[in-house]
Image (cartoon, rainbow over all chains, first blue to last red; front, side, top):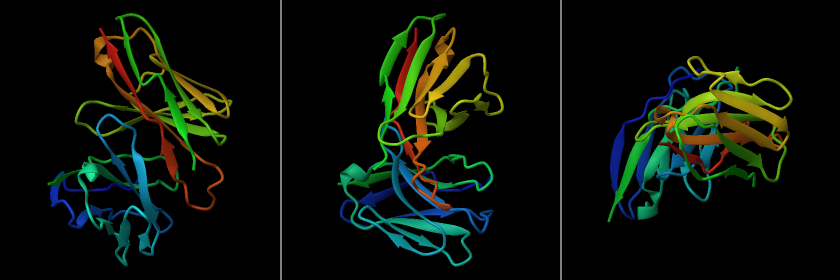
Length: 110
Length: 119
C-alpha cells in the first residue's frame, strides 16, 4: 500500500490560502490521491481527489506534481471552520482500502 | 450524494458487556464496508473489511472474536464489541463505497462515528 507523509501541523491566517503538502512517492500509476478532513469527534469528510490532473471543486483545489509523487491541497480562503485534521490518502489499487497516515492538523487563526 | 448513518453516536457500557454499533448506507447499496477505530489524538486505524454475505476480513492484530462484524444486507453492517473492557473505549467509524462510482474513482463515505466508553 502506498504510504503518505504529511507535516504534523500547520497554522494559517483566516482569509489566506492554506497549502497542505503530501508526499506519496510510492504511488502506482492507476492509484488515486484522496483528501479528507476530520473535525473533532466527527467522521472524515471528503474534500477532493485526483489521478494526474489538477482538480478544483467548491471546497478546494488539488495540485498533483507531474511525477505524481506529491500533491498539495489548497484551501483558497481559509476560515475558522476549516480548522481540522487533513488526511491525504492513496487508495490501494490492490486492496481498495484507505490506509490513513498521521495527517496534518491545520489551525486557522483569527 | 452518498450518505452513511452510524448509530449510536455515543454509548457507555459496563465492563464485561457487549455493545453493537450499526452502520447503514442510506441511499445506496454497499457490498463492502470498512470499520476503523481511533484513539484520542491519533489517526484512524483500519480494523476490518465487511463484505455482504460473507465473513469479514480483519487486519493483522485485530481480534475477530472480540470485534464481531456482520454484514447481513446491502445496507447494513454491524460491529459488536464483545465482553468490552475499558481499553476498548475508543471512537469507532465505518465507511462504505457507493458502487455507482465507476472506474478507479473509489471514493468512500464515512459515518459520523460512535464514541464508546467502557466503565
